[in-house]
Image (tube, rainbow, N blue to C red; front, side, top):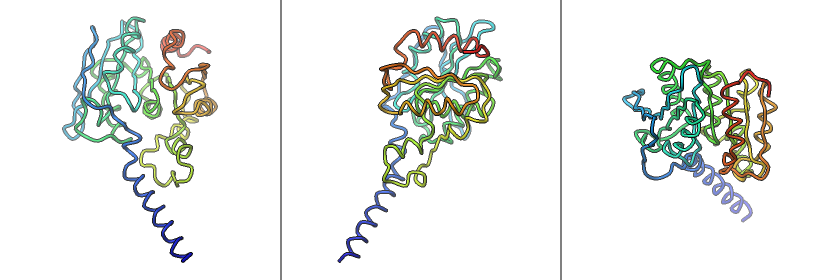
Length: 267
């Protein structure tokens, strides 16, 4: 009887692991329903040819002469259109803005989302920015929010920008999953690790990390940990801010914009 009970428990546990493995992308990439085109005067929605006849969508606000362009990667519960307000703020500050859509999100529904697929779309869009729009990597600021922080870190590792802004970042999806599901072998199950912590020590570029002290989705200590791993990082902790309201203070947006302009300055 005891062996039967143990066998039942083991089968149930293995079944649960299989279920999590097969359905994890619905949790990691909860794309909002519907597709909306971003709309902003002075901005252009680009349709860039991608691999395997795919299309990469990007919202482009041209930078004034000599000004940097901020390349933004959004969170996992957003789509490209949700960043129009942020594009407008950077536009008003005299900076360029370039936001990239993920496969499986918004207008880009030809393929499902994955870490590898997002990297391909991001690099395709950045190559277009550098080669066709004449914005070199040294005038490119990579900026990622939540899920997008891992995309920005990978693009920095590939030499696609000169500065890096991380908003509510995680160390890795494995670490985050282990916090949420400590009773599962998360390291064996995660398909899209987005391991920023492993990449951070090798990135020498200036980094600004912004995190709310009451973030209920990604613990603030993850942002703090990344601040110790990047060789040239500044961490801004926003007292009382949560995961989705961290950019509501105009002061932090102003600091991010100043960082984009003067990344070599000592912060």
